[in-house]
Length: 221
Image (tube, rainbow, N blue to C red; front, side, top):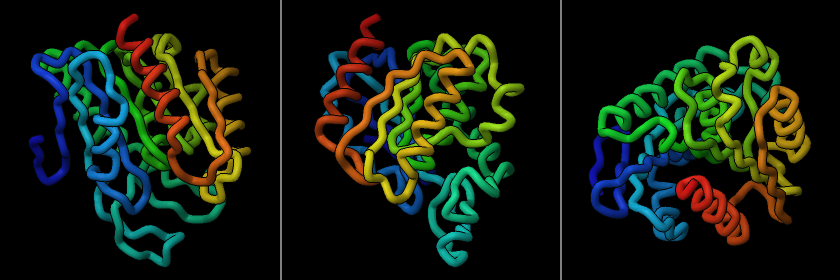
């Protein structure tokens, strides 16, 4: 494993031809999902990129400074959205994608994944790429800036497969918001594979199995 102050990199074999950039949730860091590389047991060598979100004050948490991809102003995550913060984090992920391309990974072999607000940034970024990615996974998450999405999403990204998963009892990112985001993406013309589980704001074993199956299928396609 190699790391720098803003990114953890884990490669599961030599000469990886696929990359997965995995974004953590609010208040966590890149280390949070490192164990997933062993748990997924994908059939090919993969470069996992686990970036750390910037440190910033988060309004909903009393202005406490923590790692966050953008500010959250209220319990209603789709209201008073931090447009500048979301777009700044998109730029950070764009840089990571460009670095993987520079390492010889084709865009269609690069996947974005994220949990909670990390998933929101993964969705937001993947659907604004000039070269479509291999896929995007949004776990316990939602589509940010949905109002501006219709005029910003690039037509070529409609070939990017979308995996969405949500807990039916999620008290942080409401299940209804996840469903509404799925429905919006379907309306926009994206192919969304939806999974829901009897859980709260977390990741469960059944979900990991579904993620592994989906990624394995997309990687071998």
